[in-house]
Length: 382
Image (cartoon, rainbow, N blue to C red):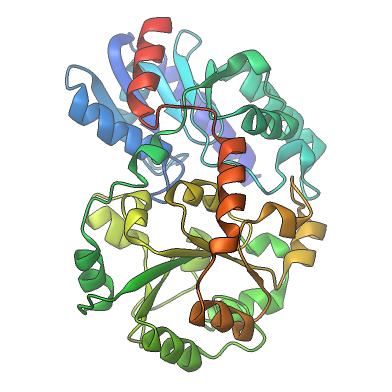
């Protein structure tokens, strides 16, 4: 019922907003990706800096039932509407540029085990009706996305993704990041970041309860004191960046451990940053099924994969590529004991060729500067 009312709200506001005259140099970015590798937010920053003659508006969070009428007027008056999730237009004569928010490893839409056919068909119609251009990086990306969302091949343009423009160009120094999050200085520091996927859909009370108790790995043998001591011994620092839903389960983001720190959205918003503007300062990534691992390949650094609930995830939602061990270019660990073994001896030279192989598969775009080609294409083509 709530979903029905929200759709009615969107329909009503669309109608009213569509009565506004379109302005040729107006762009609106509907950012549903927060600040964790948001193509929309980073494109907004780029255009605002490099094309001041265009009037670009950032709308976040999106979608929302709490937007002001002034915001809806800007949505209705924009010629270009940029989206990171479902494609959207307030009117037919607008141009929708769809960025999406990651190269998918997890099954989505028609391919997922835990979605409804009726919802998938409705989403298919939205993509067909509203998306004028879908940015892409490779044939593999297009195949995966079309399998899940039934996107027509003619909609894709291999122009890359804005988030990649920033991944190897940190907005602040490593020393600043260390001081901000860990309140320390260490010339030998190696910073890692842990970014798991959305685990709530596992529908496993044990996993959620463990996360609520600050066992963010959901390891059976989790011991934060042992983990912190191991990190400290190697001058390693771990940033924990959880999915936004899991972050809401935490009452306190202040870690009691010297070498473990939580990164929440407040820090990113306060400093006008996206997470990808910090990734270049990190030395390794820990993840499970998050699409961030495909992007981290651009840094050519160690990636550690957590597999303690792999079988559950494959059953509940599913993966698009398998076997998992063959598509993950890094050590797979199933417990804290195994994780610490990798962290004590983090030499991953054996995975370098695998990282290169997967990066070549997902990236056929020669130019790593995607913002400008996307802007030029959309303003000249449409």
